[in-house]
Amino acid sequence: MLPPFDLCEPQSLADALQALSKHSDARPLAGATNLVPDLRDKRETCRNFISLEALDELRYIKRDGGRVTLGARTTIADILDDDGMKTDAPALYASAQIFGGAMVRTAATIGGNICCGSPSADSVPPLLTLDADVTLSSACGERTVPIDEFYVDYKKTVMRSDEMLTSVSWNVPPQGSANLFYKLARRKGDAITVTGVAVMIAVQGGVCSTARIALGSVGPTIFRAGAAEDMLMGKALSEDIIEQAAKAAADRCSPIDDIRAGAGYRLQTAHSLTRRLVTQAWQQIA
Ligand SMILES: Cc1cc2nc3c(=O)[nH]c(=O)nc-3n(C[C@H](O)[C@H](O)[C@H](O)COP(=O)(O)OP(=O)(O)OC[C@H]3O[C@@H](n4cnc5c(N)ncnc54)[C@H](O)[C@@H]3O)c2cc1C
Image 1 (cartoon, rainbow, N blue to C red):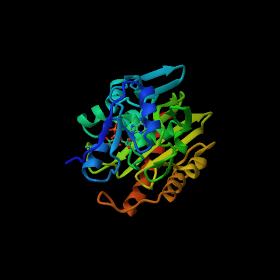
Image 2: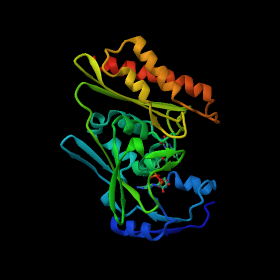
Image 3: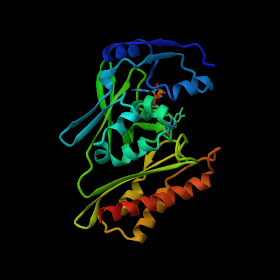
Image 4: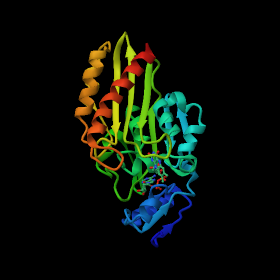
């Protein structure tokens, strides 16, 4: 059973931001696919929510030159319905394909997935490999933060209590690049990620010109494996180089044991999935 809570239902973004600025204890409520289970299971203590339901101005997919922007209320189903996302964000599209079940995908928003701060949020590793930026808005204005700097600790972000995420944007991957995501979970659908890995590899002149590797569910936050990326940059990738980078990626992980998997298994799969995805990306470009 849900505890009682207050729900403010603004009809515009401006009103929502005003409401957030007046109530420092209030939080946005988007698709509620995280918040309702968390309220029901008493993991959520907030009792004051600002519904984003009526804010259609935050539900869009825009393209401008080589830049793609998703409004915060864009749902996972919207991403799947947009054919262009297969090339504009291949790893994000792949993550949407294995996200929850149909009912969850229809309600769950990209903003809610980014802001819940869960280490298993499936859209986040792909967005990290796209070097995405998030826009945080308040009644006083807005600021843009690289998604790589958005998370500070488990379920903690740099977002202030008077701010909400209004959009996420990135540059379309260049020609000669591959962007992949793999979600390891106990089932294909409706399962929380045990280990999630996304990679972006681009090649110029026969060597790796962009290397981004992001890992989920293997630490308190989702993160880029910078040392592993550095090992790939400027090189023609061989089995040996990829293996060393995969090991470096696993070394950066600090997983926990939980009901879905042990820490040791997560470490092993972070290593093997990184190796597999970088190899696949390199072969795909070749
Ligand atoms: C059965 C089931 C299956 C699921 N499967 C998956 C899965 O496969 N992969 C996955 O990653 N997740 C999964 N989830 C978790 C959840 O669906 C996602 O995290 C979803 O994207 C959350 O979005 P939402 O719009 O429902 O957020 P909400 O539940 O409304 O909000 C989540 C959090 O984000 C905050 N928030 C929401 N929007 C904003 C905003 N614009 N600005 C600031 N803060 C905001 C809220 O205050 C809250 O703290 C699943 C959940 C269920 C119940």
